[in-house]
Image 1: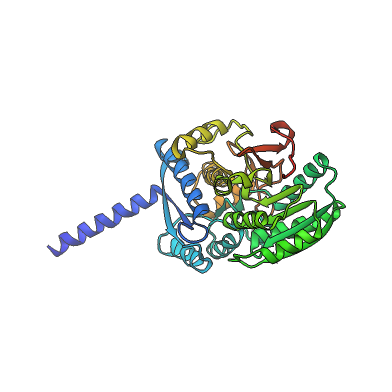
Image 2 (image 1 turned 30 degrees about the horizontal axis):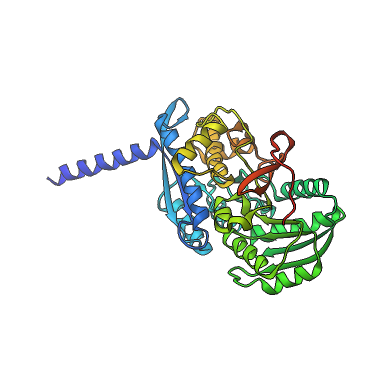
Length: 393
């Protein structure tokens, strides 16, 4: 009897090992509760769309055989320390082959640090701050282009379409991505000849911006530029209206890119401008699991009943890039997949993906957008332009 039990245990262990060897496991720490839950759920939706398409096709092709994909996910509750712990658990206990990064540059940075120690490729879909990618990480790859490209496109577009814009007021959240976007704007605006009449940061969790907004009002800016996350920006826009703070151009990074910003503000969202890393009007045909921007868009709308934004698209694209690297490498070996990612140069439904020396997707023409009559309109690039910049009323 004892011998029989040992044989049974051995067969079960062998079966489990064979299953593990035929399955690619990807770890995904996600903010499904807490302050970043809205954003984390967007990543989850995009990952699920990709996963279902890949597995429906038999899995990822590796060296002539198909391997199914399993996504191992935990809610890190929008807590940076917990994100770090979940990344460690996914690698050491769940034995994932690769990781995805959480929402935002700050949380991406801590997860990337864990992945680097273990030599695990990590795909970042929502991190664009150069400060995350300048740490010398070899295993971190991001599908968003650097922040500087967004800022330069905005300055050029706005000053061309509205030449009276000469003075800018900046208010940024004291957090990795929003602070980087605010600091980048200050630097690039000054170089472009704009006068920065106000530059200030507000703490994470701030609920009253009245003092800062009153100072901005007194500064008489032509352009008010605010960075933060969706809930911050909705609050700031409402308080601006209450205090009578306005300017011909009001930009909120990256509020108008999200439908919940427009839904949360109603008419107050109109004529607020922003920037994005993707918009469905940029139509690409590709050889990935979606095949085209239109196919991704149509599937998403049928499933979610609203338009996708750049978070959805970039999240799906990050896994597509990983899939393409595995298939090109012909192996799941982490180091070889990492090297293939470093040299990847592909066209996806999301657009071109080519990682630079620091692991960031190389710069391209990024959409500048504005809410007009309750809908997002593209102001730039010219190839997909839908409208001109309108002054805030």
